[in-house]
Image (cartoon, rainbow, N blue to C red):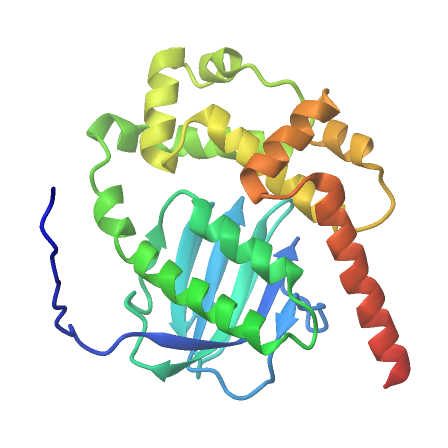
Length: 289
């Protein structure tokens, strides 16, 4: 039988405690001035901006310095400076404004961090999309906690990315072409062997270099991209769930529902139901103002 044990923990500096002020999820050429934000908690001046590229590529210009973000990349910038954001086509990204209630972000401003989208990101975005406006206090605390945890997750990203093989780095441009192709052909039945052939790579090397560059296999990346796109479509009326599943490359609605629930913790119908309730409540609130 094991003995009883006690642990003593020593503080290691000031923890980072953020307060999210504004969050927006965007698709297309630029950040519209009047774009409807997913979640908002007032508009005081922000200490920082944070941009997270979900799909495609994103160009950000700040103080005459240009940053290019690929899918999975994160950039932190000071909140008291002008920032220009440009994207094209099916590019999708999130933008955050926040203040520091305690401590400072663990990631450095002006440095691009990159890591594959994981469960923590999915949990954060699921909670973000489910938040009502105005958000309840518990939802605010939950989102702030997720956001703080994510900054520590992103902190390790540059070191991990430096471990890419020299061969993978040599084929980085080709892998980016493959990513762009996958993002713009989600509805098609894609054969990785054919895509590898187009890049003049063996299928084995293509999978290897893709995984080293993106952090996930081509198949896993494609599935995540399809489900992310489906999640966006489910938030807007007009298409049935079966039509959405086909539009993102699923020809079995059962498999689509199964993968969606495994990825986000909700069935497509349950997720859509929550989004519709949120829109209805928002419309009622606007009418009563």
